[in-house]
Structure formats: C-alpha cells, structure tokens
Image (cartoon, rainbow, N blue to C red; front, top):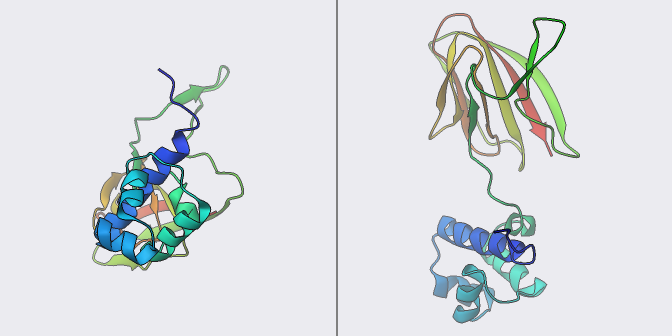
Length: 187
C-alpha cells in the first residue's frame, strides 16, 4: 500500500515534535503553554492529525529551541556503517575492478577530504562542528573507534562509517599505523 503524499509532511512534523519535545524535557502541557497553543492542538499535531499553521509551528520551534527546518527534515541514522565486504559493488567487464558506492553527495553540499594518520594511546575528541555537518570515515589501514562520543563504532581496514559531526564525536586508533580517509560534508 502506497503512503499518502499529503500525510507525509504531517507524519514528519509529528515525529519531529515528539522527538524535540522529549529532547527538551518539556511536558506536553508546558510546551503548549510556552508556545501559546492549546494542549489539544499540540496533542493532535504530535499524533499526525490537524492542519498546523506556519505561526503555530514557528511558536513551537521557538519554545523547543529548534530551527524550523528540523520539523520537516526526516530523521537520519545517527551512524551508518558499511563493512569492507558489504555494500553493492559493480564490477568492470574488462578489468579486475569493483566500485562500491558508500555515500552519494546531497545537492548543494561541499565535501572536504583529509587523510588521517593516528597511533594508539590518545583519543581525538572533537567538539560539535556547525549545524548540518556530517563526517564520513573510510578506514584504510589498522583499526579505530569512530563516531558519536557516546556510541562510537569499531572499524577495521576497509570499513566505512558516517555520522553527524554537529554533535561531539571521536577518533581513536586501536592499532599502530592506523590511517583513514576523512570527509567532512557541509550542507
């Protein structure tokens, strides 16, 4: 059964409102009071029903301290991992050559590429970058712990991970001569 395209924005808004209200720690009643909307209106919006006005949504964003676009931006995985032997690979006909797409660049994005060389014994802890920045790591050699500070993943040579870099994140070499390709993506 196909989803209703007119319902999709309401579902995204409902999910975002529930997520952001939980993140803020505000109750339904307190959020509604601070935003100047009725509790029943907010309850309906969080249930994916109703017809929210721009003004109502804007007031909720101010109360929840989130950019307006976050209500329409569907949640993305916090961390994406593709192991060295995973992914859809396409082979060339006339050469021993395979290409595996790890990440397509979103429209309007800028990507900066870095080679990282690291040794065990210290952790590179990064503070959050600008909103919307994502990091992509392709481990070239060694082993490393990378990703969100509270939930990093271990990568081996050939593994790939992507995570939001607008939250605290880490890179820790677990074996000597660890190297990686690091791509920062700015949208």
